[in-house]
Length: 71
Image 1 (cartoon, rainbow, N blue to C red):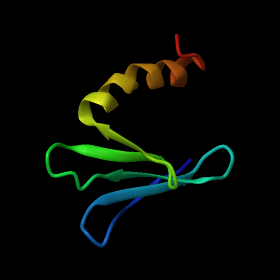
Image 2 (cartoon, one colour):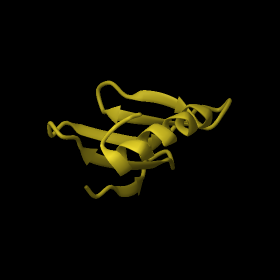
Image 3 (cartoon, rainbow, N blue to C red):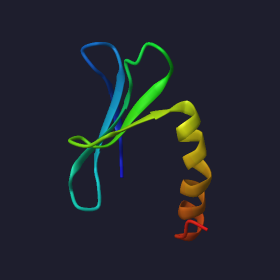
């Protein structure tokens, strides 16, 4: 899967990709002014994640990449 990063009209970085079911998804820097965050997921139903939340997901995602499992 290749994710090409682009800049939105408001100057935020955004990458689009398709998931296993061919749904259009994205990862995008949030415009939230109070803390750094990203939008991630299927475009119609994305998660709004802070840096702390994204950090908590990294070990689970890495485990899945390495083994196909979450634990």
